[in-house]
Length: 418
Ligand code: DP6
Image (tube, rainbow, N blue to C red; front, side, top):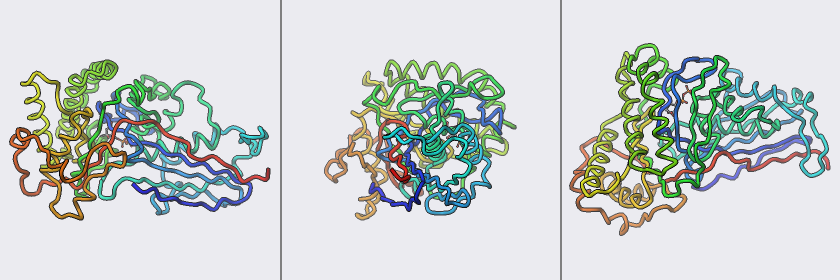
């Protein structure tokens, strides 16, 4: 994906910081809060961090005395910071903890911590997700906003994971985007939320064969936002209560163990069961919430057929699907099955029209072959099992990715006279 290089006007005696942060896809889902204000979850969750080579949020913050007020833009449109409790919560938490701004070369103090209130912020945030993807951006967006402010204010953690307790107040799932690799969000027990933190289970190099395919089945239709959806689930779903009390902790242990031992069969089973249970909770919510569409259900069916076929041949499963608050399928698979899976989905869903086909696969890290000849190599048995898509089933775009690192500071400079 071409990176739009934006140059910013930086006034004299100002500081500029740019950060990028990743998306994460949960394999044990967060769904439901026990405290709406602090964003404390009813259960722990665990996710893979998606490589920023395919998708990421980017935030630049300029701090200057010459600005009259804090201002923010998101994807080029003005965003009312004052009107957002969550943006304010994160901003205030980090402002409270601001340290002196020190010139990294000379060591001299350029902004004393007590002078920070005079510096207003210009915040420019953008996501580079493929248009029409309909992918949630609150996790990467808030992780990026938090990381960028932390870099600006020289934030120092008082305890491990403290920054994740701040990102969490922007959006729950954002706390897991502060680390690369595999990350758990431990629900914690305390009312003040200080033990509700994200912890890295394994870094991005631990399971290098792991790959991710995102099949975009989102049609732009309005869905129930996760924040309000989970609120209704907490109020009405007995299955959610049972899940939080009796199921998730066991799954968390099983999943952590599967990741540490790189046991794909166990990983895949827990991932699919947990996604299914989350969508069962949505159905158990009153009134019910439906996130999966016809295409999503077909993909679930296909993956189970492929996994059954592999099992009959004494092989581990081919792939695991998981779905968030929308119909897009996220498929975790290992490198050896990535191209065959892409070829199958390409046969089923790639538009015949040549120009559309060229942009149908988004693979900026060149993890697969996308020429017609390679894509045509479809396993005949797989193709027979999968059948033909029914009318109305569509995959708009496929994003090919892997598990990657956490947020990055890409720029930290000042324009004070040297
Ligand atoms: C289905 O983190 O978007 O993606 O805390 O209200 O901002 P808020 O919700 P959010 O919920 C994500 C829910 C999910 C599952 C997950 O990522 O674990």
